[in-house]
Length: 146
Image (cartoon, rainbow, N blue to C red; front, side, top):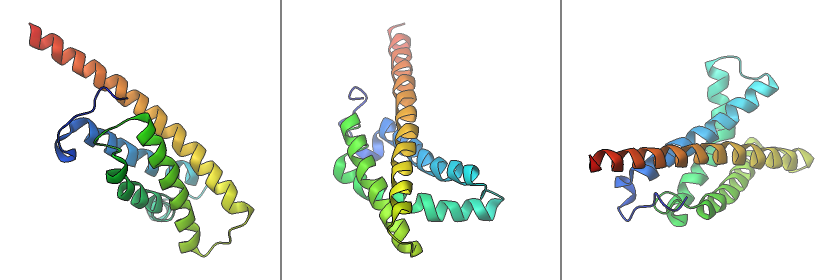
């Protein structure tokens, strides 16, 4: 994932912006899938609540860490995995704290499921984004040579 990096500032790096939007969508999708599996996705209010309880804590930590880890200015697999491990873990901790839940077996099960499912979504997204970006760049180079 190192080829599409740019020396430009984060707000002018189109690949970084694309990755940030997709990563956020993956983290929201995690909550929606979980709600669907648990049968709690029964309307807009439930979806909003699921977002607030499950995605928002992770998203907040994710985007607070991203500038320090250079997740989008230097998008490497290492930066992604470090951001993922720290943000999902801290987000799950904050979620349980905010909801007043006990740190028992349920915490560890949710933490494991959150880590596994968000990683699967993020890796799938990042793989597709890399493929699309490379194809797009190759087309741009081919068109420029004509």
